[in-house]
Length: 581
View 1 (cartoon, one colour):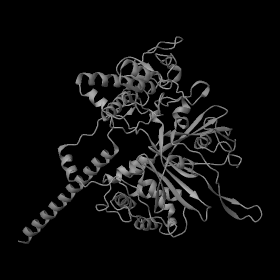
View 2 (cartoon, helix red, strand yellow; view 1 turned 90 degrees about the vertical axis):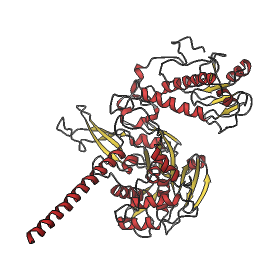
View 3 (cartoon, rainbow, N blue to C red; view 1 turned 135 degrees about the vertical axis):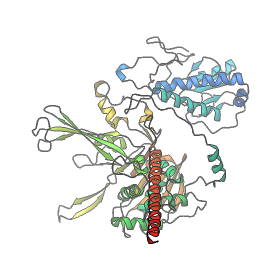
View 4 (cartoon, helix red, strand yellow; view 1 turned 180 degrees about the vertical axis):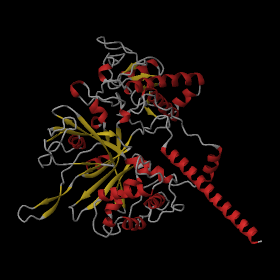
């Protein structure tokens, strides 16, 4: 494989970890149709690759080559060195036309690497009699005999294990200088296998509508977003809260447990969350009654109620499922313009509310995107001398305040501030008003530019587009969107949610198959994103295990105290009997 002559000669499978600048080019098939190697079909009918793996010696050689290709790309995207310290290495080039490759395709039978868009890699396969090549970026394998991208479970397993291994070796976290804790796949024990054999298989579907119980669309859309939240789903379907064992009264966690049991049952008829609504009315008087409520207000109320009744709930360093899922941290930096002193404060957050209006009160033009709202949210703000007193100067001076996200949560919830109350200039009456301006939002979101880490370590000339750490630390995928139709006093809530790779539109009890494009074109009120790769603190015991162990110790201590009390009662009874005799 050749490289550009004006830079250091890179080796395709070397140890360098320099990311290649992405280029947009046509990935359509050079001769026939246009399969996208980033989205290979679930083709399991290719007979050629299984036949290749039938020979153990050939299988070892091919899989070793595949691992090397995947590891090469994983090293390049896992670069955690500051931009100024990165070694300058040119992009690899096509062995046929010498064109720079931002996305090399590598033959699995020899050292050839070429371009897809010009058809050179497929030409090489046909001319050399080789059958397979691999896309370095996605790990997808193309079969020349089938003339299509193929799926093989062995390749999927090798790809995942190789990427995880490279991430573990190269990722460093802010909390420690040590490498990541090695990933250990779950292997069931004999007792767990016995329990699995006796377990009841649940249907893997959550596409069940919710009945409107009288202007309760605000409740239905939030519940649908909870149902399709992968972290909440895994928690409640894993029996982490059992309503039959719970001792709390009017427990929202019990209602969540019941909700997931109903939605994941074999019954596909619309479900009426009457018990959930009744509990909400009892624990939150501001949400009671049949008047229309705000979905975001109910969202915050539900989070607080689940948190208060959840196992592991504390006022400090809470490790309940709500804080494990939604909790992040906002950092506010106020810089004195006279002495440069920076006063930083950190506040917890469960969601982010974004303004649609600029500082002048007008709806921003050209910035009606989620990224634009986030830029305004983290944009430096001038503070007057009367608004800030510097602790170092001990005097009032002008300052600059800037918000940034110190800790990103596993699930990001955004609310666009569409509802407001304006005072009528004629009669001084307060008039409710809705901002109907459309806001564009992406299917995938990189939160790096809005983090404290990126702002404190900018690139050249203060550029925050280059940031430390791999993309996996910052990337999120959309999984639910809430929409509001109509005006404030007579509107209606609907929502979109992703189930596996399919999108559905939920309108109370009506569920309709939709698509990502329709969802992205909708007028969003709230958006929910989940982190693509969940991270964890290295070499620390998971919080759920800490909570479980503490509960066991507490129960054992309580049993000991009860046993001592019983023994004391028996001794006192015996002594009383002896004294009576």
